[in-house]
Length: 382
Ligand SMILES: NC(=O)c1ccc[n+]([C@@H]2O[C@H](COP(=O)([O-])OP(=O)(O)OC[C@H]3O[C@@H](n4cnc5c(N)ncnc54)[C@H](O)[C@@H]3O)[C@@H](O)[C@H]2O)c1
Image 1 (cartoon, protein in one colour):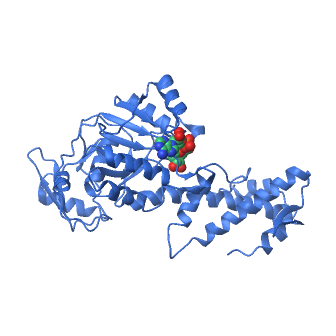
Image 2: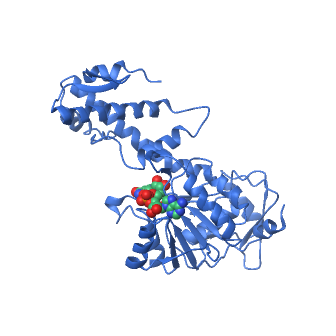
């Protein structure tokens, strides 16, 4: 183990974070930067788009960072789709930011990836910075249309690549730390949280009763210890914090998956509504009446299909999940992607032709007119 890494493991968790840079000041990054600034941090921004950076500085006082050398926390909010195709995931831009961070940032700083990322990305980042910095993933549930209730400050997930990373992340986001009464009870209580692998972690208390996890040469960064929100272990540090309620998870992959699966779940619900709509069209049933009728049941909530599943979140994140495993690839989601394509073709054709009953689809470069039922049931789902 490198000497500098050893030093890091003995790091005091009661870190006084002050200087924060938000990298990527788009739809998500700008509200994050404003929020961080409102919470008293010395707030900077960085964006490859100069106009975006200048606007954040002029309108919200977000100072421009040129170098990452002096920051305590680096929050990554860059886009994670291909520049020419917002439905296709791509983390090249994010990794180029990490490259710059790994060259310039100071040891012991915290990297928080708030962008939506494919499973395995946080560990790639961690390896790139060689654990000279802590790495957490704290994905967003930010929703532009309801920013008051579903903005930056809402219950969020956080996962750390290693134990100490998670501790630092929690300190920064919601001000918690692990404070057991004795070493023995620390280990007992920590194991009670059930998802824990303490095999390479020794918890000891220092004179202030704060836990130090002296992690030995770690071959398993997959699972870390979760400070419970409900036991006496969790206690506020009294340091500057974002005061965002966080739900810590035992591995960073769970944090990565939580974000992309929650969006995949939403995608599935919409695709079901789209399919039901096409079904109704081809069987001369009123969709709105059927939906209203279905939704009278206490555990049923069929959504309303609109323009197809768009935006740069749901399709991309669903693809991230479908591609997240080499062994099991979700068949139901692959079918949902096809259904959304069918639905889009249907509404586009309807708009073009003013027709309510037939659908134009392109197969082998030939456009054919088909009825919605043919479209739905003749396509083989691979
Ligand atoms: N917008 C949302 O509602 C929302 C919600 C949850 C999660 N997310 C996720 O947050 C991330 C960002 O989304 P967004 O909506 O803010 O995207 P956006 O396109 O609005 O903004 C991205 C910003 O990052 C900048 N950027 C891109 N590459 C960069 C680089 N290499 N270095 C510096 N800056 C760079 C761009 O110039 C842009 O200003 C995505 O992963 C997205 O999936 C977005």
